[in-house]
Length: 235
Ligand SMILES: Nc1ncnc2c1ncn2[C@@H]1O[C@H](COP(=O)(O)OP(=O)(O)OP(=O)(O)O)[C@@H](O)[C@H]1O
Image 1 (cartoon, rainbow, N blue to C red):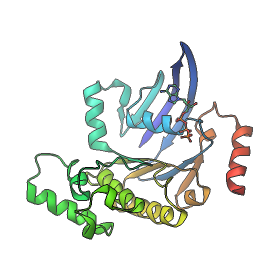
Image 2 (image 1 turned 90 degrees about the horizontal axis):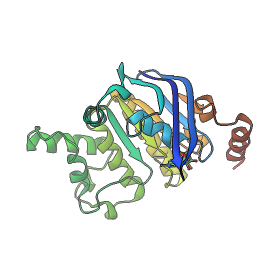
Image 3 (image 1 turned 90 degrees about the vertical axis):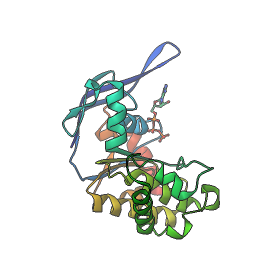
């Protein structure tokens, strides 16, 4: 379970403090699959960065599985991120010189013996129908295939929380729906909580719940976001 309480986040820009997020209260139950929609610049990525512990709030509390993130040391936050969180980016962030298999194996804990590592990676490649592409480097894969590898890399350590920032933003609609459905199914199977930012209202329908950022961030003006949502709908 994730609870954000009275969270304020500002950025310093040219010596001026710029308010970005004001979250009075927001909760996500363990195992929920939530799509976050909202206009550009409304703080969606910042919200994910706060949940992952990459960013710290100026004030307020963020609790994940009863652990208060701001009370953890930097080292403990890094460990929490490595163990509990899988992060999926729009542009995959795969290492170009490594094969699909090596990109995934890289995130497995070093104490796991080589043969077990291979077996585990192969099982996951099978789940996303990519076993026959295991030796391909990212440039030798389609964009949808690269995202499948990135999804496996994020999920293989069974994190309790998956954060996805526009994970299908650079894919055509059909591939995007397939990849988003795959991600949701895998999170379902693992019981992981999924919080995904998407611009696409049609894709957001695949989720249990869609939340507009103005329901979370009190700084986003309702009327502006409504107009933008309507524009997205019309598009
Ligand atoms: N490091 C930073 N320093 C200063 N301002 C920042 C920084 N990072 C983000 N911002 C500002 O914070 C606001 C929210 O950015 P964020 O990336 O969270 O928005 P977003 O809703 O994810 O946008 P998009 O949909 O375009 O990706 C923007 O106005 C952005 O300019």
